[in-house]
Length: 266
Image (cartoon, rainbow, N blue to C red; front, side, top):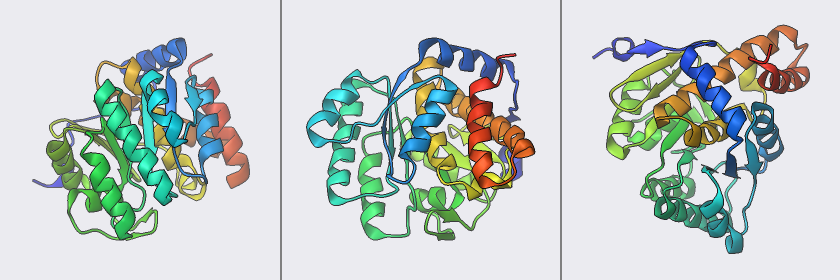
């Protein structure tokens, strides 16, 4: 089947389901545990705060299991891993599985280096609720061959859609495929998310913080598919609006946070 024929629907702001899910997020402010890379920690926390969630970055081996147990959702992003980080991530994922805490895996640069690729394979055994990545990362994790340079994708999201659907079937996770158009799939349904802007690829942290926002939506939506869709729609809408007011990448970052914090409020 051709990739474009696999798409079963699309979403854009203000879709009623997304509006309702965003209202629930702001009402409940879910405690979202983020084990993410050092480059994006501050931006990720600010994105979650702007959207209405409650971020926490607990990364110590002695505390991580206890905190996963009280958090409402978890993000594991393997962007800047050390040997110690890898052990923390595995412990967090195992605890999430034991406590039924919904969690998101962001397999940054999967396939590029053996250590992180092996770690990602181990993390998937703990059944992530959502796997979020760009086309090259999803191709690598699913077992397809695909192009990539570090964290950047050289494959299109549409070309990687068959791999995303296969990965969803293989793992039972919803797969959130980021690109010029985002595609969200549970292996059966495929939702396309248009919008956003190319400038978002020039600002560190946008993709990684999307994974965190997906995690924040998980405890307040009826399905993981809706969580990933809601986060992706909000990101696309905020990015599209922010670029119209921004003068460059620096002002875009501020405008993007402003858009997330004000969208739907008036």
